[in-house]
Amino acid sequence: MTQRHSTRGAWLIMLASLITMAICVYDYYTPETGLIGTGGVITVAVAGLLMLLASLTMGLVANRGCFLQGFLVVSILLDIIGSSVAGYFLESPVIMAAQALALIGWLINVIGDAAERSVEIDEVEDED
Image (spheres, rainbow, N blue to C red):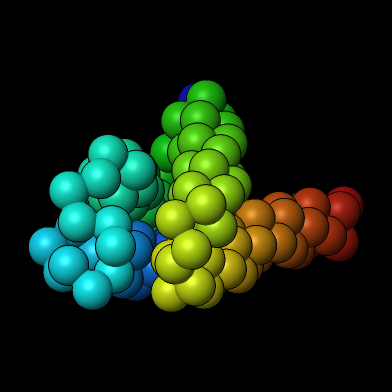
């Protein structure tokens, strides 16, 4: 069963994942950062790519099944938490700030979805 879900915060998550990947590429190739060639930066870049793909799915496919919606919401949240912790250990405040931006987008998406469901339920009850 597919339902229409909110796509509001997905664009903010996409922006945050693009920022994360750009900073990881910069950190990987710039000797002054001290992170040149490290596996942690590659891991965060791959996590950013996965977050980008998940948020693209969330933003472009408004009619999603409940399982897909749950999977996307949980995976993006786990990605945000993991990338934030990795950004902390890599001592990269820009990665942590980008993940804070992604968290805001995630909250907008989850709260917007709940608000739309509430409005739909109210409209159904008013018709009776």
